[in-house]
Image 1 (cartoon, rainbow, N blue to C red):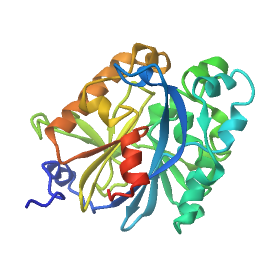
Image 2: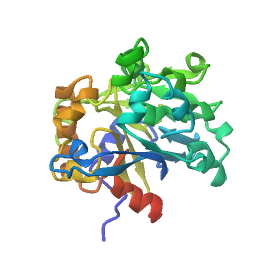
Image 3: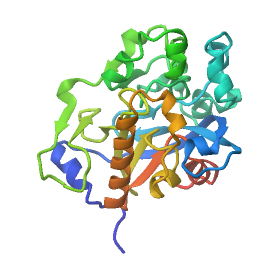
Length: 304
């Protein structure tokens, strides 16, 4: 039997020329919201469905525990109390209990939130950044466009783009670490032709975590490629909202495009995601709001 840890994608890590250590991964669910299913996936029913807000803890052998997003937090309710931000809560009613917060769950797992060195932010929607304030020592890593295109939004324009500036830590500017141009890896034409991206970002500088561009759903959204002892993984954020969506080619409805800054870019990212999953069946793709991922890796506790 072949070792699932070996993959054609290993050529990508080899190309970085770095040591690229393997990491381990654990998935958590930090609250949820509700929305009509037909909005989130083509052919969905009109009923309201629960949509989990997942975040990941990445255990790096040298760098410690690194988070990918944080999910919801109690402060989401405070930030959405006044208008027009309250429209956000009305459009996607949120279910959250304090013990579901990222910091609380990590603490219950024996991990001190104050000791988390880095959080990788896939994009700046509220359901991905609401817990940032609970990690006071963490550097915040992200694609520059993801924040630069949000920072000036106010009022209804910010709400339409899913941005609540009050969720950011007061010292955000001091802890922000946007990806530097020199961390980019340009892939030559013809290299790994099945791989649908021509560049990646070496997030830590050791090749272990490679960010790929998945824009459209939000400004500067990234996915994160990593490899574990069990094989390669992609945390694809909101490039698809479920495994069923990308497996069955069922993108969200046109109405979902209301919050998107670039619907064409989203469609292109969705196609790249499908191409990647088809070309590398050993790759496990985790969408940030996937009920199947929550069931398998959070509720049933299957290893990633």
